Length: 587
Image 1 (cartoon, rainbow, N blue to C red):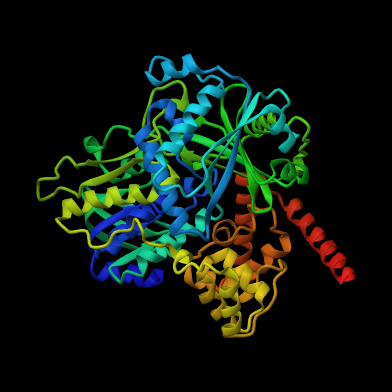
Image 2: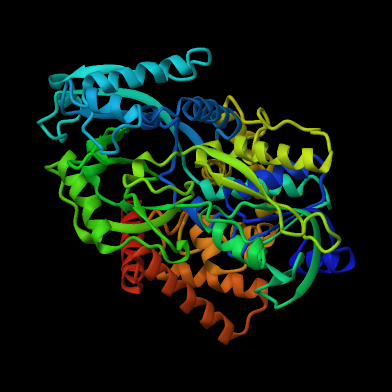
């Protein structure tokens, strides 16, 4: 169902059971949950799906080891259960991540950790071997019945430096345990969306649209792409806008009915670095370390590069967050502390991103102490029991990426109870997108799809890595008509055309930042940008002026939000040409 069909349908029948506001990972999760129960649900996203905090996570799928010292045992337990579910339900995007913790003290943090656990201290402190050992023992205990991954192990200084010689030689020990990582969180969000939409015509979703208050208790959806506006009459609204939840509530309520602030988010920034010495130094592990100020930082191999982060800074306006110069310097300083012999040049930072953690409102001076758990609360309008009253609003507060499924399930159960509707479908063991029918024998699967589509095994393998078992559908589409190469050898015109036609792509950044990993991995060139733009313009029937406007919009966004300028993209043209020439000569 395209945009025009969605708006026409709402114009003809404005009554819906639920309007979900926000197309981040939690909004998509509750949308999917409700759609699968047969609820008439419409999702409205102001920008693109998974374009806010859901695109700016640390790419970790984890239980939250450090939350143990805050006493958030139930959150850690839930997160570990959901982590293991994602390993089973989305194996194409979520995989095990061996994680090593450098330890610089033995007994440090015992007393301070105890008083922090009791709520008597807010200060961060260094965590010694005893504290880390205790935390990992709890981690192992909480996963003992599933045992999907190995238990933790401790090493002495000599064996640690033998394995990771670039680590700061001041270490005393190291500990290795297993968590998980997600390669393409934005694509997994799109798969949640498609899973919900596949439930039937009662499930609709639109990006680049706004839900606006037209009168007390009366709403309309405005299409910011085409300018259409239609009235909508939801029985209930779910506010799943994360860091934007208070801003959204200001637009949903009028006058004294506006609720008190619910959110108090913090900003986290990350860098993507292309440095071979750094990649080799990690030896396939994530290094989970404390900076000199006690702030937890991470670095791990990510799609051929290295992801490093993050910061934790209070913010008031989630719309304007970006990685500032001082944050980049802080991250590089932390990297120099844990790996002092590794030198990173500025030009090796190929991408940077920043997002707002949707944390509950808190006055705590130490952001690390703000609870990471989630909950739902209904906010009623002042006249909710009168004929003029508007629908109740269910606000989804807090949450971390790992627990999106259980949080969506929780919110959906609140909605179903209010609507007096039964739950028909469980999602705990439901595979997501390309995780369905995931093959035990990857090579046999590739051989079968190759035979069915006449596409080369190498290309099918690339598609499988990119889309999981959905690669079969994409390969079949590519095989239906003549295909043409693009400036990036891993993509072709037919693949990009399918993404545009089937994944609600409206802008160039939807493709280059979220439907693909071209930008975040530093593989996007100016030539590839223009080639993809030409395909998008052809599909959308844009004029030359509109195409030029879109190009300028994207390049500005890439510079201001991600630190990538046009000169960097142009340089990648030259690097790609040089690589092709070298490959041709060697061939």
